[in-house]
Length: 389
Image 1 (tube, rainbow, N blue to C red):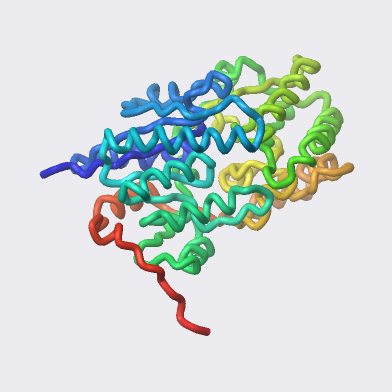
Image 2 (cartoon, one colour):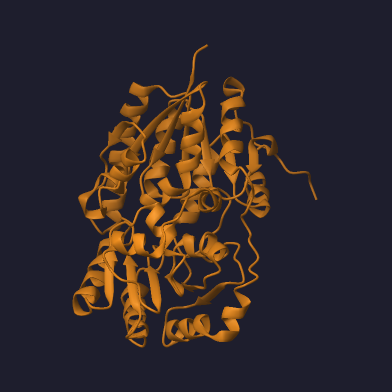
């Protein structure tokens, strides 16, 4: 019996962490052949050459697709997308997968979906149907949804939204967030082991900061970073652990500012291009607050009963737990939000968070749906009209 070839394509550290167990499920199935394709930030020294984490986890990389222009501009991002489309087209033509699996809303993922769509390769998309009003991610995510043939969403609200966009309910599955299943399955590092990895001793108070570009409102970046640094200076005894921004427009600018701050405060701040998913999740056990605008602060952090200070509009309209404090990033809003997060009253509230994205055996269910999909009929999509109100 011919194995069904499933190409899982990843371009960033966070995306790979969410795909990890689905990749394991595919790799361990004797009737499936896993083809791992890496691209984007994974192949950039500037962003930590994170493809090495994938290899260290025991996955064979079938193809490395270079596409990232070293630029901090919108035109540079567009050129990277063009390179990705050209190079990924060649790679898919060579590997001939029966289906590709992509996740989320990165700009390279849009180009990947285009390459697969035109070559009539079915697309399975994870984390569709979500909203994040502060960035171009919404337009990218919904475009990928319309090009995809199987949809694995993280909550029932998102399933309804994908169906609302004309996708057949039979192809839209709510199996929960793969990131939360990952936390339950991994054996996380204890404090001494983690300190050895990050080469820093954790303190009595520890802050984890991840701030990305809000790509529809670039003018706010400098001011928000200034307010963030001023707010962090109010906690001189805390260890500040930064993880760098993605390769989006102004992402490199943000990373330079982080490096400048760390150089001025080396005794109490450090920055990482990438911690890797095991180290990152292990660190969440020991931080007092997560600060920034990453989706991880909305989805994964609540499982650790840790507060998230969510800055700006980037994660607007995502389903969120009661552990999240939103602030606009201007004036004293970040400082006030951190103070709230550390208060005794809010710490009590953290003990009973409501989880929006949790389900069991997420990766196994995704693999089973991919394995059983009727590919010839799947590729012939028709718009699904909702019943008239």
